[in-house]
Image 1: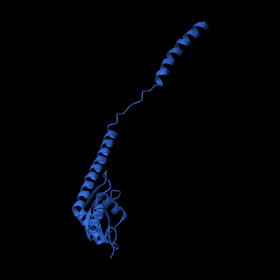
Image 2 (image 1 turned 90 degrees about the vertical axis):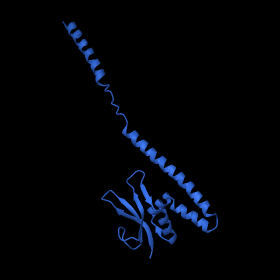
Image 3 (image 1 turned 30 degrees about the vertical axis):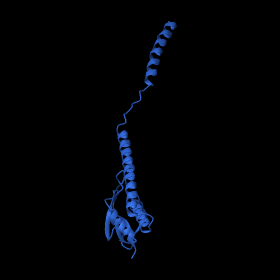
Image 4 (image 1 turned 60 degrees about the vertical axis):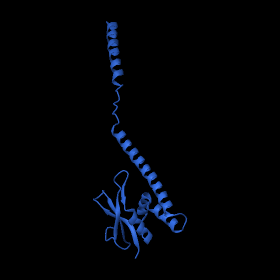
Length: 163
């Protein structure tokens, strides 16, 4: 039985919302699943992702294969990095305290980066909303208005010369 970590679609038409689940590879996309690991909402900016890291890590260590999208989500949340560090601990490359220290350092840097991106998006959105509307001043009516009195002045002079 091939166990997969994949997305299960919910939400209405053109408004997707996904659950991240562990399911038998033979079951349908929205069908029976073994365990729910979290959720993913791609409609928010940035996308809202909630994952139980420990459950996801346990399933990865048991051999569950994530789909491409779930792999990217787990990588973004640091689950794959944590798995990588724990593999280094099992091989004796460094101790568990060192691995957790590396992970917490990465996690804090990652959270700061995400907060910076979210702040930049909010700032850009507010600037877009507060753009002052600049109306162009119509320059063509003014020269036409100036040319009209000159034409009127020229016309009476011509009539005077004709008399």
